[in-house]
Image 1 (cartoon, rainbow, N blue to C red):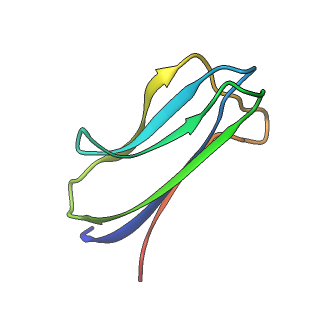
Image 2 (cartoon, rainbow, N blue to C red):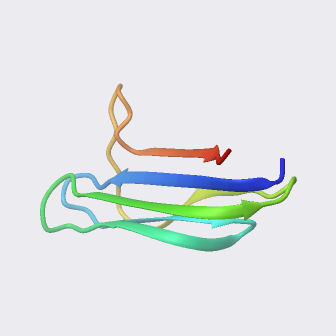
Amino acid sequence: MDGTYVFYVTAVEYGKQYLQVDIVLNSVSKVRTMGFSDASHQTGTNMVVLNLQKGDSVWVMYNTGTGYWTQTVPATTFTGFLIG
């Protein structure tokens, strides 16, 4: 449905490995989050507000890096919601 949406990503790099992921709208990267390799399990977060029309696609894309971390309770997450 048309409207203004908020999207949020949290990515946790694994074992001192570099990680970058993007929030993408219709194949165009809008924001990027990074976890650097200085220490294990660095967390990168980012948020974007997008005006969408019915049929638009939003997803998280792996950009570069060598690993992310998660467990039975998710630590690497992506969420979005419609504003009012």
